[in-house]
Image 1 (cartoon, rainbow, N blue to C red):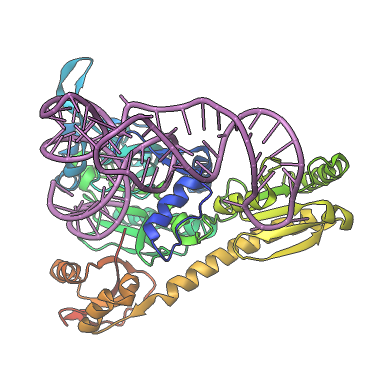
Image 2: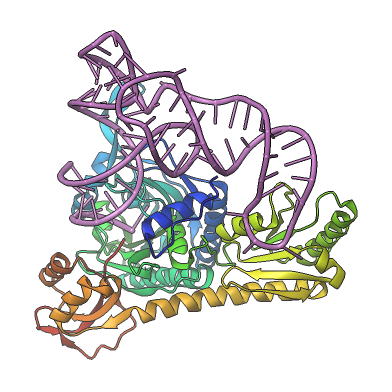
Length: 481
RNA sequence: CGGAGAGUAGCGCAGCGGCAGCGCGCACGGUUUGGGACCGUGAGGUCGCCGGUUCAAAUCCGGCCUCUCCGACCA
């Protein structure tokens, strides 16, 4: 590992991002183009996110299951929109066991089709509904331009799939799960998000309606951090997912699907990170507190005393926070400080001879460049409180940044100028007539796309920013990842 | 897939027809330790891959692969 400083965020955001991912040991490039290895530290972060999602899925009545990686090609082709949307990015297995397969197998890009096929077998009666399933899995999409965590050929995610008796229930489920994503993003990852509806052209291939949570990254570009789809009866009809209602009438189900992926790790990096490196939200950080003991080597008495102090610290923290002790003598204190800052640990405890004398420790918050001392007796009470404060501060800071970089515009010429100039990477709220034509023109002329039609808006109506026709709603426009 | 750049030790780079180099990291020994310590001794290489030109190729030529950035596509 090189000792050189990382590229400052302001100088080259992409270079900064790649360096942080690798030097913080979150992930590495794999030998296959577009693929990545998630290293233990990055995987621990994912596990913490998984735990928070999984807990909420179970609280809302969902059960985990697992469906196969391989999907018959014919399944993908059953839903017209779906095949159109996913065909360009499919990985297809044509041979197995040295023989050409009779029917090619698609490596799942998402599992609506195979799950739809199984739902048909499992659902007979209205009594079987709702069916609430989630799976933790890897999926493959042959992306043209990969980026660590944000867009790799293979990625990890969860995909929820549910079937309901009525459209209203399906819609309710879709929104419920979107709200779970809002909660996880904001409460756990400390990332402020805007929940809203996707435009027709941005929605999932095969969905009736797609909802999204959109976040602003440190370079002001938008990132879709989670999606929830109301699939209507599109997949139910394609896969004949039917039930008998109370009146013995055969009805098609209404289905939903929703997903959040390892992309969230990219979102965390790009929302909170700074020129020192990664900054992790305490609630998801694999290591919440790093304890760095300091002593003069060769001074055995001093070392013993400091290590006794470390034992007291461990006792105070044990069971309350996730912590590690970095007592490596081969690295200077300064080196270790920098190392753990680069890796985003929210809170550092320094303990050396001076602290032992005064029965104190030095605390350093990762979110601020300042140190302060507290009595060792206050540790067990103070550290969890501090972690909460850091969590809140990260969210508040990110929200302030996003709000500062969100503008409301009504004039198209100004909009165009804005997207070319300094503000080119900001969120713009503007009335939009809702037509594909206007959306496509805006995209072609400004590179900005509609991120979502935010739920959080007054529906007073106005004029479309581009065509001037009546518009019912405002959309958020931004350049996106 | 279009445009640009890059691949030489783990990382960052120099060398650009004639012995494979530097800095950092790594190992060992010693001195150090409150913001990326220092000295010494070492280990580590099919110069991205394949082919061609040449007495001789990391270096010149052709093809391919990979990565990064900018587009189109996308969780």
